Length: 174
Image (cartoon, rainbow, N blue to C red):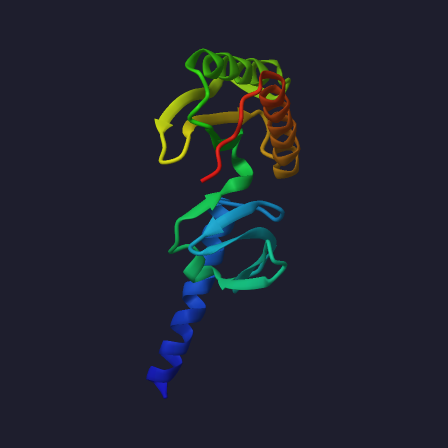
């Protein structure tokens, strides 16, 4: 009986210690977006036994605090910037001088966007793909808010499309 009680108490002590570590270290707070193990979601509640995380598909997952503190926690809510990473595929028949003009135009679009981190932007012809000339686009937005990031991504993408239409640059299809 004493052994069973000790084993049962072990989990309770582990979770209590995990709770104390969460309150002391403050790796996250209610409202933060985190990734822990295979779970990504927003912290809804931090209790003495467990922490509740709301996932993107609106599931509510309770993770015992003892288990939580044994995992690597990535607090996505504390990011200073949001990254837009894409590969733009251009048709192989595009003349090199037109490709250069298009890439320069893409760089200009990024440079003129008010929320793009000008020091962390890379737009380069990056690869000769199987069916396309591949342009690498890496842009950082000066925000940590996902909704703003996708709004600004859309603005940039529309501008890239308008530029390609204006210049007669065609996107490649596999």
